[in-house]
Amino acid sequence: MLKRSVTIAGHRTSLSLEPEFWALLQAAASEEGLPLAQLVARIDEERTTNLSSAIRVWLLNRLLARLDGKG
Image (cartoon, helix red, strand yellow):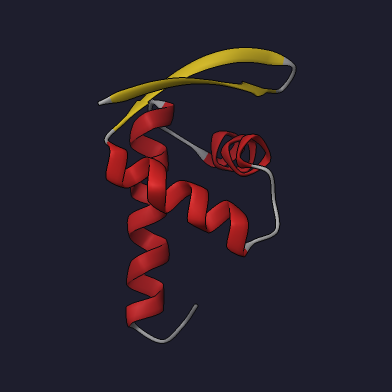
């Protein structure tokens, strides 16, 4: 697990994710033309669980959509 801090909604928060998820998250932010913190903020606005879990689920759904040819 890697723990990093990001600023979302004007405050610092720490996230713990496995290195593989950090790499996928950084790639997703790059592909969408967003800073990492802005993508995390967008995921944060939609979440119903803790932020680290929400990021993992968001990344999984993104990959599944690509496999289905929808994304």
